[in-house]
Image 1: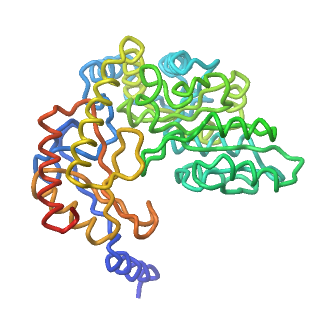
Image 2: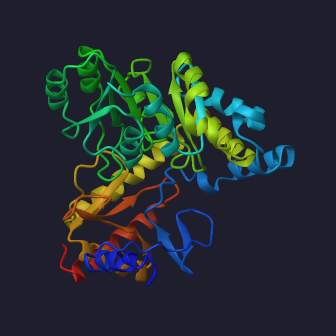
Length: 391
């Protein structure tokens, strides 16, 4: 018997609980419609908020970069892998975020893994929202700091938790800017007030706020008028920016220190020239116009109103992230399958991504969607939802 045979039993348990993830294969470019498992379907669950993943300007920038710089940087950035494109992107991001400096990493996940252990360690305290993203949780685990979880988006509970903790070490308050499964926004002004009261650093992971909230998509910190007030901003280049990578933006001293001590930066090769050039093009488009951001919000508002009129529970979303709440894992999975058969691609989300009994289809609206696309999706949700007795 194989020493890994126990994994077969674990997979069976996942199936029985209705938690098996169906991973479909995409064979076309990302867009409002694409081909999944050989079938053309309406794409309603991509993080491609602004349609940048197949934007002509980004594609041309990537092709040009390959001609000039090749396909890879050739080494970690501290040895011989930092190219002029990396420096230009970091300068562009710092300007876009209105911070002193920025550093680009391989992913948003890596940005958290790089930053949190660099800021706190043994004898320090981290105060983390109980619904923070897995990358924050794992970043905290990489430190020897003690983690104290506070109630979701609850500044009063954060205050109480910080009062109860006596420590002479550093303190860090960390939260998502926009929570990816529910679409709600962290109350940053209230959290910042509490953090300052207790002498703590503040850090916001704005993966789902970049390109969505604030002036021309500058994020949740800009949305609340707190530019320069939050110590550390984490962003991703794989969602609204449509490409790949992550970044940290903040004071120059923070970025200088991360260049010296952030392990994912020091020990892993940086982004390819094509990725970096495409990201530069995305930032330049947003610097020139907020048209795509406005279109995104118009589409999101229209879709959510239409779904609510059908009787769907959309949770507590405040953003284009639209959780269609089902509850039961088996029914959520079946709704996703039925929608796919009807031409709509919307994956079910269940435990462990969300708590048991809170299964949903997380619908992601895009600026690439036409009004007719949204009408089609709403009609199919209605048909399939009624057939399953969900509405």
